[in-house]
Length: 262
Image 1 (cartoon, rainbow, N blue to C red):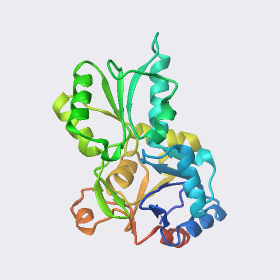
Image 2: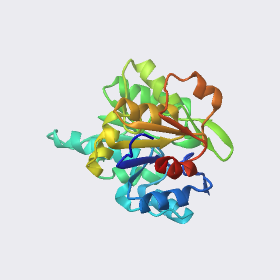
Image 3: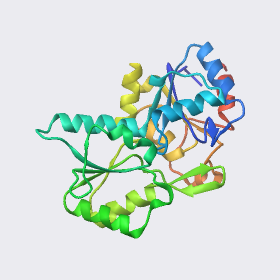
Image 4: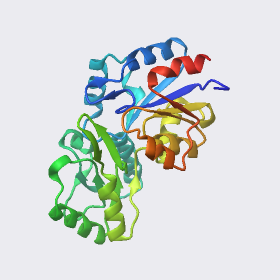
């Protein structure tokens, strides 16, 4: 690595842990990087856990971090909605189609499933069905905008790869001929909010993740360096076919301190 970054951004699931299992060496990696003086931020498109639950999970696995260092896609959506509401002369109406665990994050807005200004879409597990899809479709055709907490294609679970909400986001965009506002990675506004939180520029920042599209590709488009790790959702064939070319490819996040010191 020709120059050291000032700020290192880490994806969570698949990069630092999978489910409730630490990626071997990840906790020690974070501790080493702190000792070396790097500033750190932890980013996630996870939409099934609140900020407090995510923080507690990381602490239980042994990671040391402060609440402001953890920035999730739901937090990005909340900031976006707050910005929109400030410009209106009436309360903002939303329909949060999200996991129960994060619904309280949007409690300050008026919830209106019949005539929302925005449908906020996150991961709802097994609750998807055609009735719900058609309700969202009709809300959008009546003027509601779609805010998607992310648009990931797939994710790594303890049971293997699973299709992610990008499947539903892309489908709704197609049938409604209207693009969603994407809140998490690889959205440039989301990354910029993270950079602003540390007062560091893109050129001084490294993004580390297992998703070549959202993590590496999104970071590089904004001028950051991107490091892909071969854990989590990494698949060799997908990597080889991708037009995205990471700046570095590592077997695991555990290899990062040695690379930065070399």
